[in-house]
Length: 295
Ligand code: EPU
Image 1 (tube, rainbow, N blue to C red):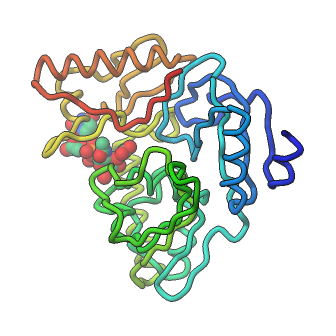
Image 2 (image 1 turned 135 degrees about the vertical axis):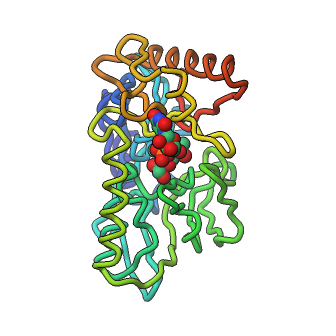
């Protein structure tokens, strides 16, 4: 089995800690299968299935809350190739495993803008695509012209045109077990200095309002239509509220922080308590933005 994986260009890392692979710093242990050759992904998945091994696909781990203890799935992850971004006119062909911030910066240096607000959003391009990540007026979906993905239901690689994909606020029409492989983005031409200025403005806003450098998954809840979940939680005086080491950030109330050794159970309890308080006070049901993997 391990030999077959190696032949398919994959590397098996035993006993990896999800706490080290996620931005929240929470999660138990399991084996990680790192796929270096994307073209072999369908065969790798077939191999796992034939051995009865359950898998979960791990992107950048930045919008994810994973259960504690020994996990029942192998983590499958794509390694970013060296030539992760290729430019052709106003199009950027980007590998899904590429880091989002690095991609935006690379495009900017080549005078392609439009994604300035996304620079401080952690995670991979594939992860951003799946949830239509957005910030400061930019959503990645508006630049997507083509996506190639592995569709588990069909067991094959599929290429979709931008118009075939629905991108809404923090939501897309991709199937839950689709694995993003690559994307073609169309970006407007701009001067590097102009793009850089846009990036600086967004970064300043982010630094002033978000708890950067702390262990979080970004915003925990989606914003309800026409409202800000952060403001609603803040108005209830819940900044600093905590369950164990899982805290509502003092800086932005929709960021929940792992201040040390928070468990998944602590974070889930905090999410539920805050949701209950908002429901009771404002009659609004907050929906999680963070993806939760429970055993
Ligand atoms: N506010 C408060 N208290 C707080 C947080 C916010 O009063 O604790 C107020 C702010 O003062 C502001 C309003 O609420 O008047 C909106 O706050 P902010 O500008 O921070 O935006 P947000 O709606 O809370 C959204 C996204 C962020 C994104 C920012 C900037 C969601 C759930 N969040 O936050 O995305 O970075 O706008 O565009 O859509 C993420 O998705 O993980 C994320 C961080």
